Length: 232
Image (tube, rainbow, N blue to C red; front, side):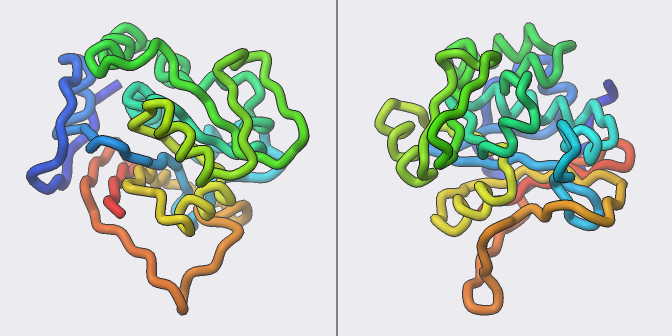
């Protein structure tokens, strides 16, 4: 994979000690403050992040972008835990939500990054759902099921999980936005139009009564894909 092209990044962002190969592929800096909740999504030009009824539709939306998978892997490698919604889990039943699963070519360097950050080998996975029972053979005892995202984040904090990655879906992301839990958003914009599907934020309404905004904290490009980073 060719490196991403850094187009913009403000000074003074936190910096993690990325292994050399990861730093070469992701120019600029990557790091998070303590106790950070950050989200990662890929969307089409018309703002669709999921196609109901299509298994692993995020891969379809990403247009087979290796760079998107690499960024996903890099963000997972920094996380103590990953939070997803039940629909996201059920749409990808074999997903293990690890860095090396997203981008196997850099498995060794991603594992080294986790060691440098003093993280466990694999992040915990928390599914937010009110279903009475949900299971995943792929996750085993790494899977934790909780009914409320606010309580789930508080519980993770109490267990020492400092960096929490939210990978959706739209309803869950709407909930964490509404609760003012999101510190950063990483958004890949693919060069596709969907014409149908679910938007980035679901289940809540903000405008015109409530203004939630973000500032740009990074812009990168890989081919026709844009990689945007926002600070909330």
